Length: 396
Image 1: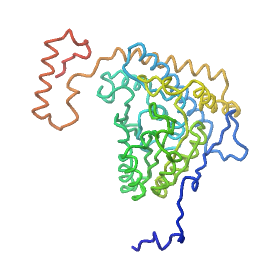
Image 2: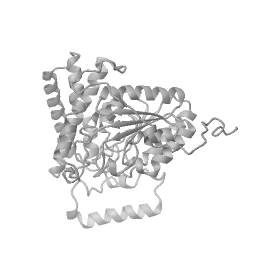
Image 3: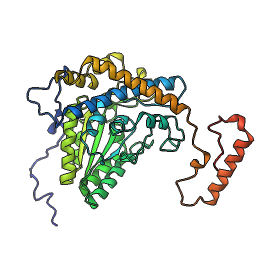
Image 4: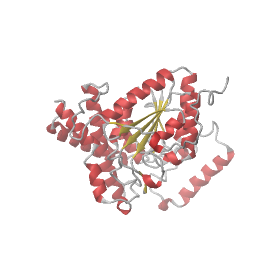
């Protein structure tokens, strides 16, 4: 095959340097802050049932985040991460997918999992690492995963899911499956080498993947202007040959429309897509973080007025699909449901010790057998140093 990079290029005869001003990427927005669409806006494919499911997931996540952050402060759990302010990004995009499309999350996408049907009990079992946790208590809180719901288990190292998404999408293409992968990450993770390798491979091999960047303005405490000099993350997609779109990440209708069209490109044309959702993390990075040390209250208040939950609620009320009375009733139902699930999960024992050693090898090798026996003998020797649940050595 001949190389057309020069033969098809626009040739000039003096130096012309190109900078960011040559590429202005627009931002898709459908809803105004008062909940009414712009007059020329093209709405996504959406009916009442889907709209109310999206909003109900918003309310569930707000209730979950509020209760779990309080529980961490009380010492009942060790760690938590809220997604307050970013709900439209993951929930709106997941609503555009098929149920068997693969989700590869970073760590702040519990809304995507809730939308797919992860129950309050399942959330609590994972957060409390009890014996009913699908991950067998091996992960820290919020590292969810569900094979049934096509949600890849969250991994702590930053950016690892990006090249994995490209590889998974390559397999979907090879098997001719009518599905795609959506891969979530923050603008901070876009500074990792895995980001560049993943996008380059996706662009070269034309695989059905949607890279979804939640640009919330901060990589923990590092503001965006200290992370990169370019115009956000979107231009990088163009550089790697991906279809690219920037969207108002606090406008769930815009996110839904963008992802519906991105999925069509990915599945029907095997065209990888990069979506950059411009949003804001209203809460702390995690329960270990204090955002007052790196941003001020007036900045937070400015973004609080752009709340994605409130904006969508106003739209639903304009549609006569929702009322304030519905709102208060459903919020209380979610609070009660979550509290009940939490109290139940706290009483479930921790996984048996054998679960520390299984699922790696078909047959346990000698060195792990020795470690297992040493651990059992240690706990039996010092039972007073371990809780009744953490120190269980039964069923060995």
